[in-house]
Length: 347
Image 1 (cartoon, rainbow, N blue to C red):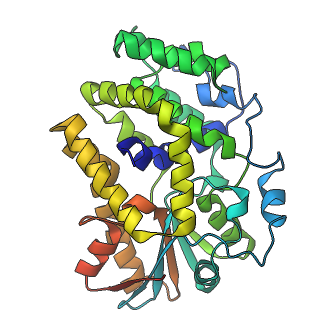
Image 2: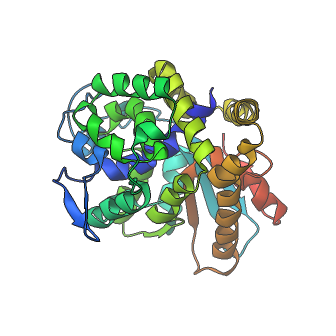
């Protein structure tokens, strides 16, 4: 598992919200002409889908309900005033991954409150486009090519021309490296975009059954993670994204298989390799990157979860965030145990 694979689901979570936007023409913001998001433009093309081209609702409904389903990563949390569950998710899925494992479905059924990183069913498209342009557009007269290595830029353009984002390739010149890299990383997941990712499945189920959805983060705070990267870190991020594209499709398949099997040891190994490769390729920059990407967010999430379980409205809380947030010394499982909770993995 590569460092790129470890973060690809997170990049897709953001890109999924952006690609949900309708393609639109240039518009004016604060007197300046700004183009629509490249990812928004991409939705005018038809993405390939596993199996058939049915929409997510039809795809899930057609699955054999007697199938064992995907195990995923599920923990039961006790020790507070309220009971709870943790689900380590991935932000994409194949239609044959549904229904989920009976233990996971039971946890969803028991939950009164479902906490997600974001509720992608409630994305404000206009606000999303404004945020992307506010944070990612280059406004100093430079272009993407001025901020990355020439060879990386050439490889980036070559990849785009063979992808669903081909029509939007020129538009990326207006954006910072982090945004270009984020969209590049999402390419290997786009073939699954007509199937509900695990987060979307949970959100739709919660809305249908009248459960309360809690958003642990905001779209703005997630974009700020990337926008807060230093120029050097953005350059490295862009370079790694370009270099690893040749392994992207296989990596995504591996990620989906790993989640379907629910192998906790593989998830822990993935986190260890993510840290090892990160320190090797980024050096001192890795601590800042990992802090923004995982550790700082984990600490804030753990604080909120603690509040829900100790002092929140009565009921059962299910917290579903990216699987990589769950493991490691600074993962949610460890942080909650340090706060006195019993956190038991459900096999």
